[in-house]
Every structure is written in C-alpha cells, then in structure tokens.
Amino acid sequence: MSAAHDVRGERAARRRFATFDRSVALFRAFLVEQTDPDRFYRLLAADSVRQISGYTPLAGRSVLDVGGGPGYFAAAFREAGATYVGLDPDVGDFAQAGESAGMLRGSGTALPVRSGAVDVAFSSNVLEHVAEPSRLLDEMVRVTRPGGTLFVSFTPWLSPWGGHETAPWHYLGGDRAARRYERRNGRPPKNRYRETLFPTSISATLRWARSHGAVEVVDALPRYHPWWARWVIRVPGAREIVAWNFLLVLRRTGPDHGGAAEKTELTGGRVAM
Image (tube, rainbow, N blue to C red):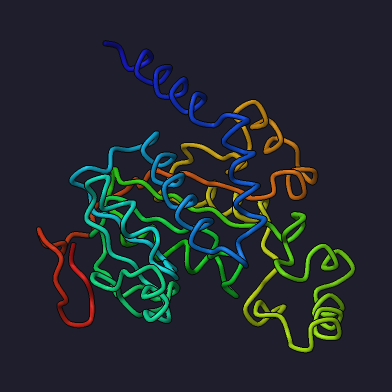
C-alpha cells in the first residue's frame, strides 16, 4: 500500500469521525458543563482520544497530558492502551474523576519530564490560561521524542467562549466583563482576566509553530466543527471568532535529546518515560 494511499485513508477516517452529529452532541454537553461536569468531561475525553487516534496510534505509547485538571482523560487514554501521565498545578483536581495514580504536580512552562521522553504530548484547553503560551509549547516540544506527536487545543480570546464564564461580554473588554460577572453573581469569575485567563490567538500560535525549528505542522483545524468547516482556519481574522476552539497537531522533528528511560519512574524530580 502506497504512502499516498495511507494518507488518503487517514483523511477519510478523520472525516467520518468529524460529523455534524458529533458537533451537536459536543455542543449539548457543553451547555451542561457547570451543572453536569461528569457528562461533559467524560464525553470530551472519549472524543479527544478518538480524534488523536486519527493521527497516531495510542496502544503502547506514552502520553503526557499537560494541564490535565480533573482526571477524566486518564481512563480514556488508558482504555486505548496508552501509558498515561497527567500533570497539573493541583493534583487534587484529578480526584474529581477518581483518578490520581500516575499524576504529577507541576508547571506546564517548566515540565518535570526528561527531554525526548514521551510519544505524545497532549494539552486540552490549557493554553489560554498561561501567561506565556510559547513557553508551554516549547516545553511540550522538548519532552516529545523525534517522530512523536503534539496535540494542542485552546479557546481563542475572540471566540464566543473566549471569556469563558464572562462571555460574551469579554468582547467589550476582559476587565469590564469580569466586573459585570461579579456584580451579577456576587463573586469574581474563576477565570480572572490576565491572571488565569489570557487573550490567546490562533494567528500567534500558528506563527510560533511555523517558525519553530523542531516541529512540523500536521494539521490545524476547528476542533469541534464538522470536517467540512475546516476551511475557516484559512481565513485570518474570521477564524479567531468562528473556529470556537482551535486544534493544532504537530510532529516532532530534529535531534533526539536522549536521556529517556524505558519505563515511567520519578528520577531527580523529572519523569523518564
């Protein structure tokens, strides 16, 4: 079977996955994220594993989930046969999903993981919560082995949900939206503008990817949209609003940093996978 045939087959499989019905199901689950987080995050975790499986096999691979938060993704990745390690500033969050083994506490901008140690570096809806997103991306590149896959998604600031719980009023300014939220709810928003929520853009992220010497762009698409809506990413400006959530798939290139062990173990404050 030719390489071209393989590529066409992979694209067809991803189209069969990214259906309109899938988008509707995700949107309906999104509406109950606050009231029924189990339903939303379990669906999102299963969907993410299916989506990334369209780019790289997971069975027998090591996966680092940067900013894992509640550990709903752990079970989904492990069911797919992956060796999963999640990292979050607050490991206690993983207990919400009954998953705490194989979790690390740490910062995404200074990963406690050896260079070239993982097959897949995964981050779902974390980048917009980092003051220096390029540092997190650089760290994900560093810990991924050559030939490995990076899977990064985030909500652009100009997306309808860019302000998170303060949306859509963030279009009038992040500070103004936060003040309005506090007046109406009697408490400040969980996602505080320029403290835990930052205006991140698709254009800036693509510029980083295209200028980085150790990755190549495999795919760039609106994460939750059906396959026929992929074109929106090719339209600067409009994509920041219409994409809703941006997914970037990268392949690690460049020399191997070395130093990776065959199995997961804590060594000197860093994980060798």
